[in-house]
Image (tube, helix red, strand yellow):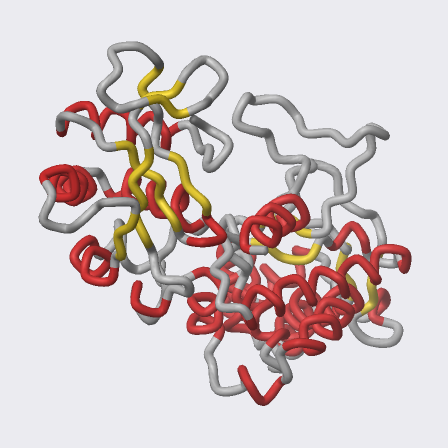
Length: 348
């Protein structure tokens, strides 16, 4: 189930319009892609504002809310990083002007700068109490031309030095609480089917993101903490040289390589908020045959023939299947190849 949820969340939350690892534009079979989420200037996710008014997508948002709720309920860490204003809505809170900086810092600075402009400067801008529903934070360079009045008759009410503060707060409210509200409400409805509001009410948006994706403050992983809870099977024991080499190799990895290893083994690159002791099931390293024939069948370790296997994993079980390599350099080489290939149980 872990692998299924992880793959589902990747497919559903990551915008298809982003380029893939090969530099090619992602497309579905019909040539038309609907992104349910878009990327903000801070490289976090928000609901795709271009779907405003499309009621057909609301059941999809509701389903995705259930998917995220299921992941949290089962203590499954997932990769998506959501923008804090969106998380505030999931926590049942209204966003204010200061929350805008967590969505689009440049837009926030420019909007606040209106407060300090002179009367002549404000008048020269020709602003009225309306705004364009531009789709900010998407990979597309196009934006909607829909004009929204911030107050009744706003298109004929000029922004002046006297009412500029009201204008700033109305724009902020429109950007964060009104735009995308139907999609967010549908997502929240599905989410609360599994995670009732009282369960998360005491979390801040920062804490809630850690609950979803783990602790991002640690650059690599807590190697000693992971080693302390690691289990061994198939003939491995922590006193064996290969296990000692293994932890030396993990400790020598760069923080990025450590997180790739963690993703290879558990499907998430961030360690659990409560430490590795909270992983269920507990992480385990299992010994497997060193060599295999051309058909993938294991052959005796002492044989001089056959292919030397790569480490593999079963992320749903937090299980690393490690051949008993004869040297530390070979162990490091094979492990790096496996994790850099971004493959798991299917790679051997």
